[in-house]
Amino acid sequence: MAAQREETLQAAARGDGQAWHDLVHAYTGRVYALLYRQCGSPELAEEITQATFVKIVTELPNYHELGRFEAWLFRIAVNRLRDEQRRQKRQARPMDFTTLPPQAVNQGEGAVLPLETMQQQERHDQLNEAVQRLPQADQELLNLRYTAELSFAQIAETLGEPLGTVLARGHRALKKLRRILEPNEVEYAKPMQRKADPTT
View 1 (tube, one colour):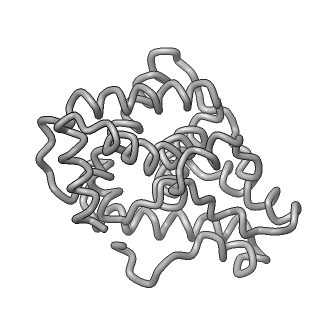
View 2 (view 1 turned 90 degrees about the horizontal axis):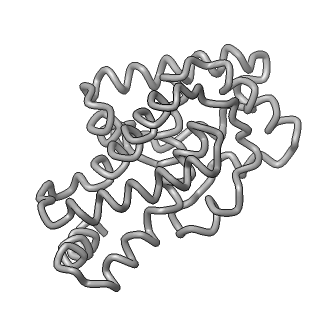
């Protein structure tokens, strides 16, 4: 998988139109879903997604960090969103984790929504409310993990923080979420559980 992605990146950097199409198809949904959950605005999320890929296509010929493309991509997206929100002095609107727009689902197979597994509306509402009560930094980290589906190692690269710090922050964020969700912490925290290895 990694080798195939690097081949696609190299081909796209050489101007291969099909390779570029494959790259955009694979990542647009995840980038859009992350941005939408962070800002709550489909228009802004779409704008920043497009701007992110414009920057990628202009800088890809000079990209040589093999194995780090996803962290690079999401770092660009997150930083552009932060810059735009600062420029507009806009605060992120409360996110509804139950109703991502169709764009997030239809723009690539990577747009997997972990929270879709929650079948009852009541559970959706309670989890949504709980996440909104977390500090913005915790929401961002959890979105990178569960919406963008980055490993903690990739999140550390994206945020420019040591891996140990990111692991500790993630652990604390989930503990906060479970405390908010008590006494149903086990039942409602399940969608946030991942693989046993925290770095993957």
